[in-house]
Amino acid sequence: NAGVTQTPKFRVLKTGQSMTLLCAQDMNHEYMYWYRQDPGMGLRLIHYSVGEGTTAKGEVPDGYNVSRLKKQNFLLGLESAAPSQTSVYFCASSYRRDETQYFGPGTRLLVL
Amino acid sequence: KQEVTQIPAALSVPEGENLVLNCSFTDSAIYNLQWFRQDPGKGLTSLLLIQSSQREQTSGRLNASLDKSSGRSTLYIAASQPGDSATYLCAVADTNAGKSTFGDGTTLTVKP
Image (cartoon, rainbow over all chains, first blue to last red; front, side, top):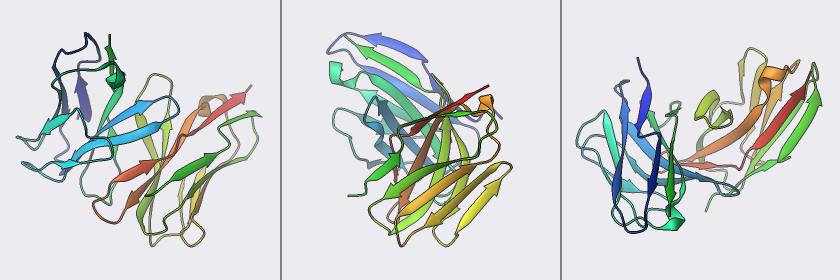
C-alpha cells in the first residue's frame, strides 16, 4: 500500500493563478481531510469529507474548494491564489472518524 | 471553540532521560485525542490514539494518558534516544464530525 500520496510536492504560483492539489489514498478510508500548516499557527483544517460525494467546511475554508468524486481521491482547488495561501498543505485520511488519521507527505506551495 | 496548548514549545534532554510532554485542551467534550510525530519537512506520523472512554495507551517506550475532566493529556517517553528528536503534536477530535484541533507542538531534541 502506498498509503496517502499528494501531488505535487512543491509548486510556485503567481498571485491570481489557479491550481489543484491531489490527494489519493489506497486504504479504502471514508474520511479525508485537507489541512494547512503555518509557523506559529499549527495545523488548521480547511475542508473535509465523510465519504464519496460529500464535502464540508473546516476552520479556514475561504479561498479553497474541494471535491470528492471518487472515494480514494480528495482534490483541493485554489481558484485565485493569494500570497496568504503560501503554506504547507497536508492531506489525511481515516477509515472512521474515531480511528487513526494517516497523513500524506505534504505539498509546499509558494504564492508570489 | 476548542483550543489546544502544548507546553513546553521546545525541550532539550540528554540521551537516556525519561520525559513528559504536555497537552491541554479547553473543551472536554472530545471524541478522541491523538499524538503525532513530525520530522522536519515531513508529514505527520501517528503515535498513539486514545478514545474518550480510555485513560491511557502504550506503544513500546511511549505511554499517553488522558484526563478529560481536567482537559489534559501527557505523552511519556522512556529512555529517550537521539532518534526521538522531532516535533510532537497532539490533536483533539470533537464530537460532531471528528474534526481535529491541533496544538502547535513540542520540538524535542535528544542529545547523544
